Image (cartoon, rainbow, N blue to C red; front, side, top):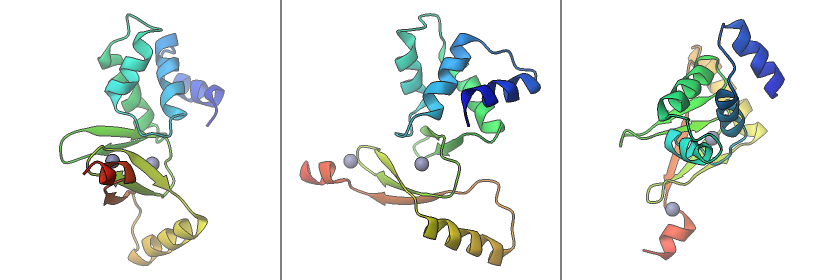
Length: 140
Ligand SMILES: [Zn+2]
Ligand SMILES: [Zn+2]
């Protein structure tokens, strides 16, 4: 979704558009590395010294509620954010926490078929694959 469309959507829901909020949206919606709220906060802190972690969380949860962002919670209570909301596989390193996306049309078709066969309407769709990445394997 482009940023203008997003602004319209936020306004429709009665949310104020502040430069901080906009910067958070732009950063997370263009990120491919599944950042944590803290990473987003630290990146924007230089440009917006008054930004708070609470604002970052609020904005991320707003995007999540609008269906534009996935929040990936993990058993260690960490959460990562992903703007890719179509079905894809997360290849997650158990050691360093790096997350890569694996996405193919074939997967999307198969997944849609499975969901249809089960006969449910998914609210959250998530496919996780845990590995040790090459870098971590080397350092072991
Ligand atoms: Zn790793
Ligand atoms: Zn992803």
